[in-house]
Figure 1 (cartoon, rainbow, N blue to C red):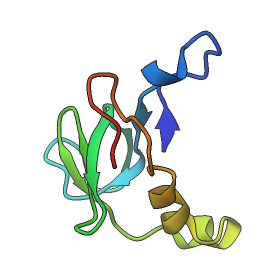
Figure 2 (cartoon, rainbow, N blue to C red):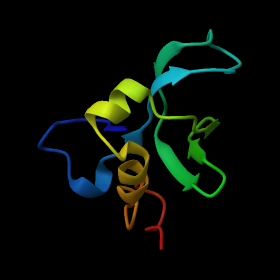
Figure 3 (cartoon, rainbow, N blue to C red):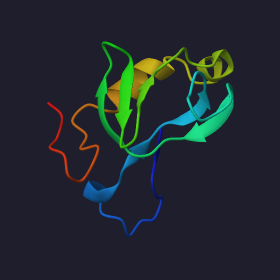
Length: 94
């Protein structure tokens, strides 16, 4: 997950979040292509879904090499969304 900008001038309430990684079964990209999504606007981690401005993404398994280097990656990813305002036009998630 990344933010739209690392510019320190951007107020925190205007920073948007994105997924970045290899995609599979995407209608416009070859399997394994590395992509960065449009802004995340909602999520349903019970179903493993992340909703962006344009699409819904089903989260897959965390890369084993990444998990080895950064243990508990998925839990930390999910925890990072708690009480975050994901998009300037949406209310905070409860």
